[in-house]
Image (cartoon, rainbow, N blue to C red; front, side, top):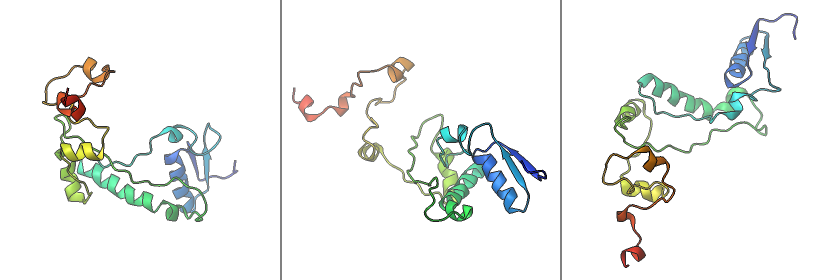
Amino acid sequence: MAESTDAVVVGAGVIGSSIALELARSGLRVVVVDKFGGAGNGSTSASSAVVRFTYPTIAGVKAAWESRHCWEAWRDHLQAPAGEPLAAFNRCGVTMLDVDFAPARMFTRHFDKVGVPYEKWGARELSGRLPAVDTGRYFPPRPVDDDEVFADASRRPHPRAQSSADADR
């Protein structure tokens, strides 16, 4: 350890490493201490590292939208050489279902103000673009219990979703 240090950062995860980088760039002598063998080996390595915009406050959406742009410029920010491997920002999207306890409008009203792009899909487009989502299983809307939702191993399709072969029987 250096004999003279301006700052000691405890933890070399994404937050601690980011703080240490910015402190060092501002001219401070920084020491980073972590219980693991290298930067990002603790909880950071197990995180999902998701940048999402679905926050119920305008401040949350604005911060997330700004972070998306920071991630896209991450290599430049780190001043890392082009051939050096880095974590990359991979845009993959998210699907929000419009449900009573978290209506989509709670988020999209902020998207509209901030400029976060999104698309509104009906059931037909949702099932066409994401075939794993069964839009007919719980139609018409009705109360369901936990056993039906979590323990149904048979995955019986809703009668409306029968194949043409089943319909001919």
